[in-house]
Amino acid sequence: QVQLVESGGGSVQPGGSLRLACTASGIIFRNYRMGWYRQAPGKQRELVAAMSSGGSTNYADSVKGRFTISRTNDKNTMYLQMNSLKPEDTAVYYCNAIREGSPENNYWGQGTQVTVSS
Image 1 (cartoon, rainbow, N blue to C red):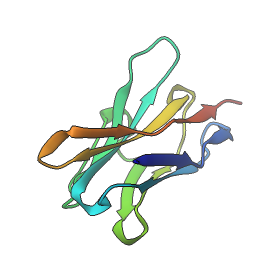
Image 2 (image 1 turned 90 degrees about the vertical axis):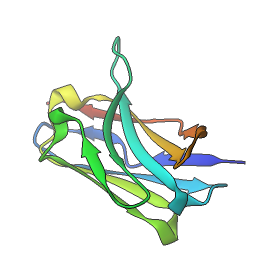
Image 3 (image 1 turned 90 degrees about the horizontal axis):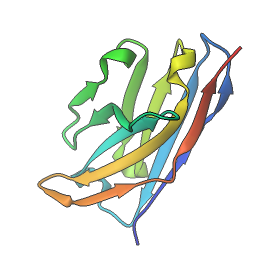
């Protein structure tokens, strides 16, 4: 059974930082493209950042220079370091895993709330 468990969400003031983590089980983690998505109330889910199995990254323009995605394959864990947070970053953040070359193997975590407010 595949599980993706996010942690690290919470409330922070504008300009603050948070670090999200996603720990996977039930998959061969190193074979998966890992990504962070977010969904704000009334909006569609959007890609925040992703990292391929080979380490290539891509970011939404809105978070470039502020967020950093990383992964530790021997711990089956992906991270998102979020700095200089803005109120518009408020959303539920979801972890996603897609097997490289087999996109039908596509899994989601349950989400973690990030609230940026003064």
